[in-house]
Every structure is written in C-alpha cells, then in structure tokens.
Length: 284
Length: 284
Picture 1: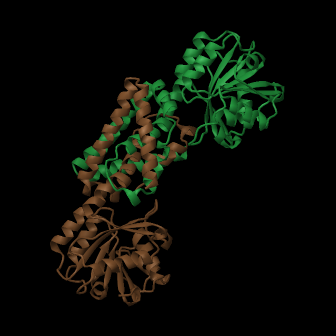
Picture 2: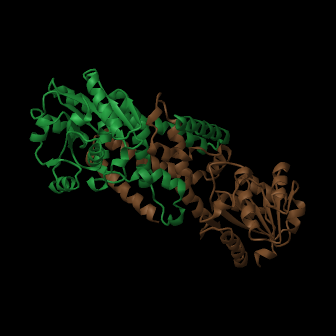
C-alpha cells in the first residue's frame, strides 16, 4: 500500500509524536489523525494544519486507521493497546517509539488480537526538550531508526513501516531483535546518561566557576533528561543496565587500582587500549 | 616591565609550547628563543620566523632570559629546572603549563634558588592532538588560564605572567591555590576523561554499528588522550583522583540500587536532582 492510501493515527502529540505528525503530513496520507489528552495541543495541531483532526477519545480514529503510531511512555503504550484492544480496525498495523523493546513486546504479544500486528520501533532522534512546542519534522532527517520485528510480523507490514520511516527522512533503518536492541541501547545510550548523572550528582566542591570546561560540558550535556521517562526506561531494561554498570565498575576499578599502586605503565596500557577502542567504536 | 623589553625562552616546542611561541611572537618580545630536543622542530620554528633562535642545549638562552616558559610533562618540568638550576639568569621568572600543580610546586620550591621565582600555570587550552605541527596561536583565544601563585611569589612577577597570559588572548585569568587547583581539576577535567576511558574499555558487545549515536560520541570524545601524559597527571594527583572516584562510585551505586529495587520514585528523584545540578554547573 502507498502512504497516500493510508489512514494514520498518531497517539500522543509530544516531542516525538508531534514531530512524526509534521513529517508525515509532508507525505500526504489519506487521513492523519491524532489522539492526545490535551485539548489545547490538539487544537493547535489542527489549526496549524498538521493533522486533519484531533481526538480526546481514541475509538473513532482507531476504528478507521490502517496504521497507528503510539508515542507514549513505555507503560502507557502497553496500557493504551490493552485498553483499546476492541477499538482497532481489523488488520491494523501498530508501532511505537519507545526506547525499550523486549519487555513491552512480550507484554503486548501476550494479549494482542490475532488480526492486529505490533511492530516495535525506536527512532534514534530527539531533543533535550519535551512537548509538542519543540516538535519538528527535522529531527528525523538523517537519523537512524530501529525496528524490532518478530516472527509474528508479516513481511508486507514490516515493509509498510519501513516505507514510512524512510519517507519521513531517516537515513538508516536497522532491523534487530528486541533483546539485542535492549542490550546495545543499555551500553550506547543509557550508560552515557547514567554516567553523566552520577558525575553531576557526585559534586561536592564549592567554587567550580570557570573550571567547568569543554570535557566536563561534553560529558554532562546529556544529564538534562526527562526524569520520569528515564526512570521507566532503566527499570524496564534492568538486567542489561545492571550488567553494563557491573562491566563499567570493573573497568573503573582497573584505573583506580593503577592510580592507587602508582603503576604508570599499567595506566598507560589502559589509556592506550581505551584510545584505540574509541577510534574503533567511532569508525563503526 | 613591558613584553617588548623581555627576553623569553620557551622550553619544549610541542602543542602547547609551539602555540605559546606563535602567540608570543605577535607581542614582539625583545628576544624569543626555544629549547627542544628535536633539531628539526627548532629549524622549522626558526624558518617560519616563529622564534629568533632554537637551541638543543639550554644554557645560553637560559642565562639571558627574563622569563622562561616550560611546556614539558610534569616530571620533566621538575627535572629541567633541577638540572639547569645554575643556568638561569639572576631574578628570572619561570612558569610551566602542566595540568598538575601541588606536587610539582612543592618539589620545585624545595630546591629552587632564592633569587628565582617559579609561578605555576595551567592553560585550559589544547587539542586532541600532539606536537608542534598542530600548534596554533588560536588555541589561547578566549581560553581560561589558571595561575597558582604562592606566598613565595612577588606581586610584580605575578603581574608580569598575567600580562603575558592576557596578551596571548586568554579571556579569563584565574588565581587559585595549587591544592584547590588539583582538587577541582580532578573533578572537572580528569574524571570526564577517566569515565570516557572506563566506558570504552567496558565494551563487550559485538555489532554496535549504527548504534553509536550522539550521547555516546559526546561522552567518549575525550577518550582519545596522550596516554603517557595522562598516566603521569593522574598518578601525581592520586589522592584527589581516588577521592573523586570514590564519590562517583557512591553516586553510581545510588542509581544501581534504585534500578535493582525497581524504585521508580527514587530514580526520578536522582535524575531530577542531576538535571538541576547540571543546570547549576553549566551556568557557572
């Protein structure tokens, strides 16, 4: 099916859902609806011509939508599908945008209707800001987008979501298992945030003033997060997070031990290995 | 004294020493000499008109210099002064550019001649590169520069180094005690590097590929370091580093414990505190 033949509903007009609707608008779907609990945001999106119509109650748009894109927090995503299970159109394709996949796919696949299909998605895009007022179609341009299809998904439906993802301007589409997604994301995305937060929270020095320089800013930039969302993401990815923290602690202990023993050669080897490893990771 | 009346020697034409000579050249000192162990680098600097003359042996330039700027590794800095103690001109002002201050000031002040004066300096400037070929007068433009004078330093000599520092384009000159410098630097500069290295060294996942995104790059940029220099900096700042690592580990354990106990509220509080703290630190 072509995007111009699709009726699409976005659930949740926050930063990602709002950006999605702006980017989708340009692809001229047959209908583009949105569901949100905030009437003002829906009105704003309607007035700006970003959506055809906004709804506080989801039953009407869901009954008529071929594709539903849910942009809520992880737990809300699961609950939304559960609470509206009888509202979806027969054969509808549902996708999400949360940063955690294994747990929510397992939950959703436990109760989802046989004729519906849920395909997990995770746009590697965002901003250090929340809400529709910061939404922009631009955030997807050149971004990577991860899909975590399972054997419950039909090839034609995966292709349909792929078409949408590439249509809104993403550069790379990566297909990977939900488990692998969560393992990798724990390391490449969640650990940088955890380290940044642990570092700012460990400060006990007065008068830092002009000493807050480039390297400190680089590492702590991501400490500015949506606390509620990140608490949920980390707890839902608990085992991977605890595993990564353990590996990190071991790695930090190696440095600490060399400093404690004033082992200059050992420290140099750790640093040389680290610089090489960084170059390898950056080339990926 | 005006800079135009000064004979100045730079010891070590690496990234910082080379940049210093390029920036000083524009201030037209009476003489600008350099000492290095690499004849090719000295020739290059002479040919490019960056210095008046280069020397493999330091005795002649030192005997005639009012100001000596040493840009060597910390241990080398101490040894250079010790080995050339009788070569310095009577009343000369000596400064350095290393990132560690308390230990080397204590060592130098133990043996320095009474008529000489050593004023510790630390330009908060640099590049992820080493050597004269990457030197540029531009690295000081807008940078912060730290001086760690002690009660052994005369006000007029501190003023002289200040004049040079502001003359080469630095924006802020910060005067602070050597002990406080090392305590703060451990947190704002050395910890970001340590965390970046510990993170890249903790990787045990194959196929990271396109998952290496913005937050990972931001935090690991500084993992590309001069291993020899950093091993020395960390060992010379041992007590502060071990203290900071301990604080960081405690802070990380708080996050780990909340994830382990699936304490969503606790995690939110930690993250909210962290986001607030980051905003405070960034405003400094």
